[in-house]
Image 1 (cartoon, rainbow, N blue to C red):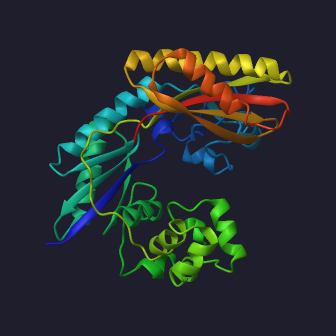
Image 2 (cartoon, rainbow, N blue to C red):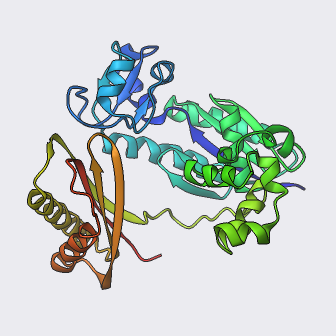
Length: 340
């Protein structure tokens, strides 16, 4: 009997939850982000398919989204509502009896044995739809990498199988950053080395690539280009690896003494939340988004795991000191990383 990994990905999850709460918005372009006011600074958390047709995407400034899609309905982020619906979906997946590895609010891997993974996938889709009225897409693969990428070819609310047999037919001529784990920066570096497609990366010399990109990264990139990846679906309860807070300012901060005060305030808030959860941090990361939209991050390790505010604030300020630019700031954030 064959073993499969399924990647279940809820379609336009946050926007879909909002449409369920506001049925009159069905079929209209919906954008969720910040406090829902596109006149203020903030970024898009998600956009409905109708809004995406205008070029709106996650991470875009709300103001830019409003310019691209002026007739869109803007709504504020409601984490509690999304977490509640996500919990329902994951419960449905577990009821299938298969091992489930939760990856976030809107996605999970499911391990399946059998000769009809498509049938199992459609059963999951129907169960999720009955329980929540939400649609999901299911990617099928022989490992997590294949399943994750397959989902993209099945959108929306479809089923797609990607295996070693059709890997290069589907992905061979795609650019390298089409692979899960390769971003624009790495894709550009590969292009500089004359490697432009997935097939070219799969055929590259791992040792030569290791000399250019690092002894671990180089060979790993060749392996994922060949479609190789982890197979095990880990049922260990999902635990966040970090916790953070950030704030977008309606007017740029030009005074870096004020930047330091804001970082201290965010660090104190994060420390209080860590203490409430009883989860000590081992590293603090400061995030700065300069005007208009350039983002940098720097981290600083803690001497020992802690939830105490004093060392967390000190680490946040130490991380901030690594920023050399003193340009106007539009967003600041502080993130605490937990032990792995």
